[in-house]
Image 1: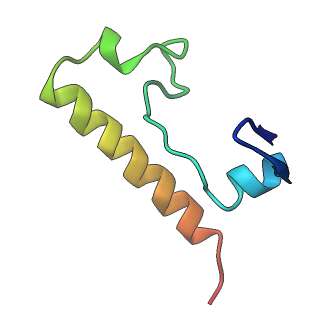
Image 2: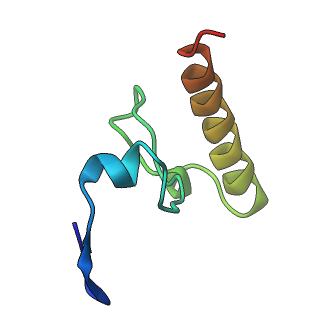
Length: 68
């Protein structure tokens, strides 16, 4: 990946994704309803809560992959 503001800095996709140097919003998840968007079945605060629920579930799955 290239930084358009700095020609000397070159990053790989690993640098971006594994080090989590990005921001994003959850708008959909794989489900039995053919990957429909959250906005298709919830509105307003309920859609925000659903996105947060999915985010917490993903965090839990990711956290369980590590051993201490």
